[in-house]
Length: 180
Image 1 (cartoon, one colour):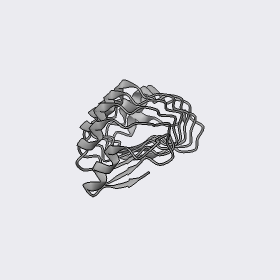
Image 2 (cartoon, rainbow, N blue to C red):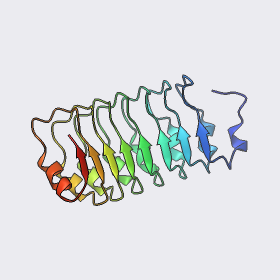
Image 3 (tube, helix red, strand yellow):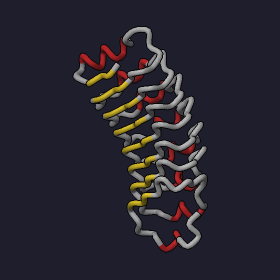
Image 4 (cartoon, helix red, strand yellow):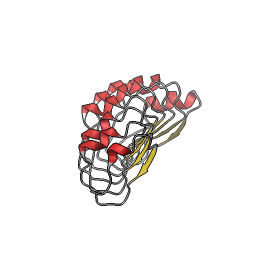
C-alpha cells in the first residue's frame, strides 16, 4: 500500500480519496490519520472493512461503494462522528446491530447488496434523513423504522415485498418520501 506514504506525518489530513486503486487492505498506520473526516475507498477490492478505519473517530463520511464487502465488523459502531455511510454495490447479506451506535448518521446507502434483514436497532438512528435499501432481498422491514423521526427519504424499491409495507404507509403519512 503506497509505501512512499508516511501516514504518521499526516496528522492534519482531513480528506483522502483512494478510489479505484485495487486496494485489498490498509496498513495499521492508517489509524494515525486522527483528523480525517472524509475517506473515499470506492471501487477497490476490499472484502472486509479494514480495522484501522474503525479507529478513525473524526470520520464523518465513509465511502466504501463498489468493493467486495461481505460483512461489517461490530467495530463499525466505533465511528460515532459518522454522518454519511455509503456501502452500496457490495455483497453484504446483513447489517450488524452495532450500526445503531452511529448516532450522528444522516445518510445510509445500502443499495445493491444481498441484504434480507435489517436489525431492529436501526430505529435508534434518530438523525437519519436518507435510507436507501433498494435492490436487496428484503421482504419485511422492522417496525422500529417508524422511530426514525428525521427520515425524509426511504428507498425500498426492487426488493421482495409482496405489498407495500405498513411501515412505509406510516412514514408517508408523516411526509417522508418513499420509493417502493
